[in-house]
Image 1 (tube, rainbow, N blue to C red):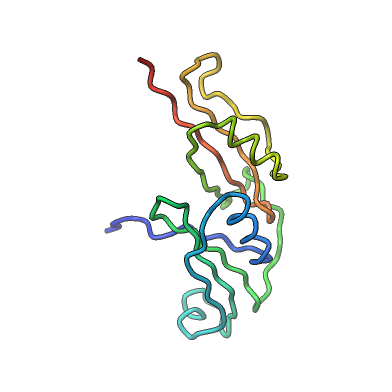
Image 2: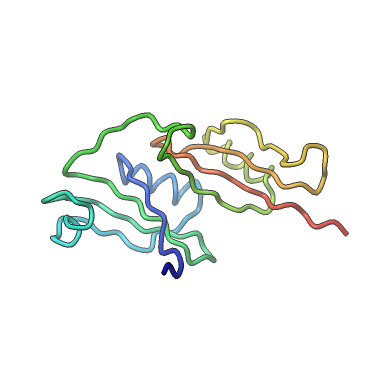
Length: 150
């Protein structure tokens, strides 16, 4: 049976551009970078002679890893990524202060789908959520958990 999660992975069009976003804008740290072609990778991804660049990142203070993969060969397509499309996904990050993080990311050029939304409108202790996208259009989310009253 399943015993846990190992990592989340996204395929990106330009690893350097994505690293600049996830590392420099969002604050994740790069834990490893690898590249090239190996029989192992080709078998796992199902493309003979696959050549990839891969980076692993993590949010400081957490153990979950984010893997970013750029396919050098075979080259990938760039279909539009919409949250409504089957197979699309997103990665959600927890924040303590939604409005502060939202404004800081906006100042760095991050484009959001909306301002932060209260889960229960009008409740000062409610949680908040907001969607935004990385440079390839991959959906990301910020979540602020509800505050405990009392």
